[in-house]
Image 1 (cartoon, rainbow, N blue to C red):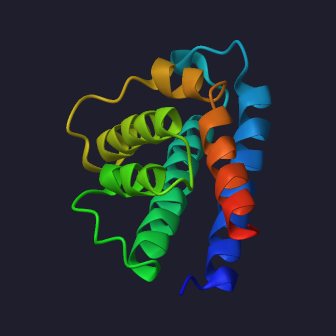
Image 2 (cartoon, one colour; image 1 turned 180 degrees about the horizontal axis):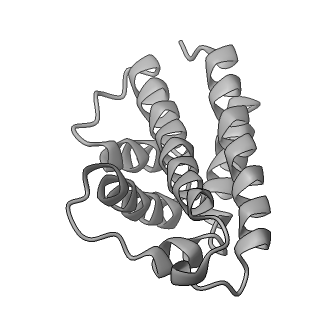
Length: 141
């Protein structure tokens, strides 16, 4: 059985991080990563992305395990499982799978992090917000 309190806490955490990312996006709008007034702000943005995406992944794994839908073999697969069971839509699941790849680059530095792309992602928070909305709606079914 899904621990509704846990899912609610995780989703609130994601929303709080998204609000902070919105604020950072306003402060960084139009700035070049090479000319930021405060380089720590960009580091904070990266951390907020990592933790927001991880919060969504945690929800996915928890719901899949609690509903006995099987253990996803990857973090991206957690979203696929949710889509297969009607929690989120399939297009959103695919985009969130790509977000996991972005998170992996930030955390593990598999590739050089393009700071300009990180800043551009500040204008693309809709998928994470949609995840919160769709899971919340599913929880109240």
